[in-house]
Amino acid sequence: MKEPLKIGLMDSGMGGLSVLKEILKYQKDLEVVYFGDLKNSPYGEKSVKTVLELTRDVCNRLLEEDVKTILLACNTATSAAAETLRKEFKIPIFGMEPAIKPAILQNPGKRVALLATPVTQKEEKLQKLKKELNADDLLLPISCPGLAGLVDRGDFAGAEEYLKPILKSLQEQEVEIVVLGCTHYVFLKEILLRNMPDLKLYDGNFGTIKHLLNSLGGFVSGSEFSKTENTKYKLILNSEEEFHFSLADNLLNSKSEV
Ligand code: DGL
Image: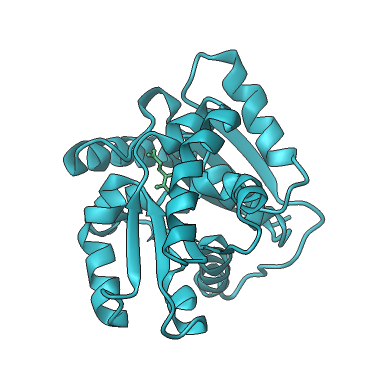
């Protein structure tokens, strides 16, 4: 029997689980190995050089699992490392695409807030995208240092307190469209909507996975890339904290729509 295609997913911690959840919706003939680098999380407040080194180490660790392609399920790692690692690795490296394009195009003339880590906000990838979309005047960048760390600790009450003043300021500025430019923040959708029900939220998970699966279809051309009953996955969490393992299970199995 043909082996399923093995792909690696990486993130600094829990955020990429929202991306894994999106992949699992499609039940393709895949085996996913997920690596959450919790010992080194969060990445978003580190230097670009450090994020590149950490991401490279995780990708090498995933190669030991014999993955045939890697998705950086982390906007921060994508911004800091995707281009370099694509040159260094022989296997395809995919990255996250923040959903700025659909947010801007579907809401012409409206201001769009981008919640993301400091590294993502300042990196060239975002600057290029802004230029391409001519979106400088419409995009309101909001750096959220520390927010991903709260998700990794399962501190959702803390995350809500963190977000309240941000939402208040959005309300004052009459901004209702928000792009979640960090895979961790996808787990905060319910909190965001509870506090501001009129928000229109965008995240990059759907678009990224659609692109990944389309590309993998081509990548495995000549063989079947069929639907299966269940996509297998294995979680590797770089952590000695017991609660990280139960938190990861809860986030993956929670019914909430991410
Ligand atoms: N999940 C990550 C992202 O998408 C990184 C968060 C962090 O480690 O700071 O940006």
